[in-house]
Amino acid sequence: MSTVARDALQPPSVSSRPAAGVAAVLAPLIGRLDTRAPQPRGFTLRFWDGSELPAAAGAPDPPVLIFRSPDALVYLLRSPGELGFSRAWVSGALDVDGDLARAFILTDTFRRAPLEAGDALPALRAIRRLGLLRRPVPPPPECEAQLGGRRHSKERDRAAISHHYDVSNEFYRRMLGPTMVYSCAYFASQGESLDEAQTRKLDLICRKLELREGERLLDIGCGWGSLLIHAAREYGVRGVGVTVSQAQAELARECVREAGLQDRLEIRPQDYRETDDGPYDKIASIGMFEHVGAANLALYLERTHALLEPGGLFLNHGIVRPRPRPMDPDSFTVRYVFPDGELHSQGHVIEAYEAAGFELRDDESLRQHYAQTLRCWAQNMDAHRAENVAEIGEERERVWRLHNVGAAIGFERGGLSIHQALLAPLAGAAAAPLRVRSFG
Image (cartoon, rainbow, N blue to C red; front, side, top):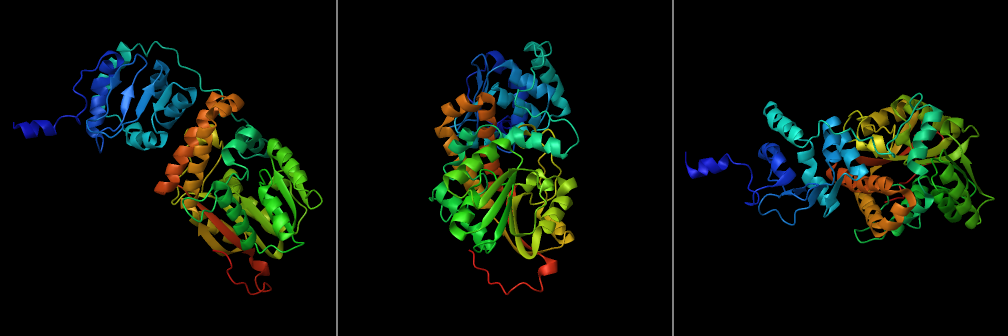
């Protein structure tokens, strides 16, 4: 056999230095995975004893995936797939030295590499030599969501929302910035500030809804009240905001008082299913319907339809998938970020709009804008990491740090999207005035 032929059968080139310690034990198994990777491994593996399996030769500035404890491998063995990696990361047993976004991209194929029959023997040898079979299974991180009761009941939805939003208003203020808007911004350029882009997004919503002085606006899932305050101050509306997050409701009321708008705006700690004081001239729902669930999507749209004036407008803004795919109950997002959250394809959502009696007046994808928004949130978090850990604890800080980076990559690559849909009741369509699209 020629030298060229022999070289073609070897694993991707790594450092010529022989592995030692834990790295030496795992080298045969990792080597098998390396041969199946679509490209040479661009990251280094470092273990709790300091031993390493270096990145492929020539890899530029490789990040380091650090296994700080044998617990990291136990998590992966006991819960293969995303759940094991999630628990290892959130607990701190697994870490990254280097750029987290780059490490996320480089390790994606490696994390999802399927084991083959031939991997069983080297895997078993490594597990035995490292004593992992005798090691107790570490408990899940404390901040992993543990919900009870019927899925998407009012009580369970409150618990799910509390898990995500009742973390700390001060934490969210540091991450989101002064506008306190927890949804996709609308950037005019790459260099524009997050606050400018969020203010533009709020105004875009108001213009799409054609708000007029004296109109009555309902904001479903009002967050900390930023949209209502902007709409009342700039467009003269009266408004009601509902949220099932107690922490959000308390701060939103405080923000309304500070803006001097308490005579025009009301904040209620209330579920959308409990709101029954229509009609409203206009309704907005920004970043909320991801929490509704497939089983309640029709009910959600029926409720908004019933609360809206026949000639009114409804703007629904939320994350969707480019193609249908069920949510993985063991995913990082469901276990740690948005428990019980469900994403639909935009085609399915449009069908639901039509079934509920709405006409789709306008539909805009903000996918690239959300990627940029998440990058800004990640930068804000990095700038305040010490304060965030002190405020919400190390586990939750790690959850949000990974979420912002991973979600930004999801939107950049097209695995996630976000749509802003402008809807009108078909029953009032004949009487509606001629409208000219006035937003860009």
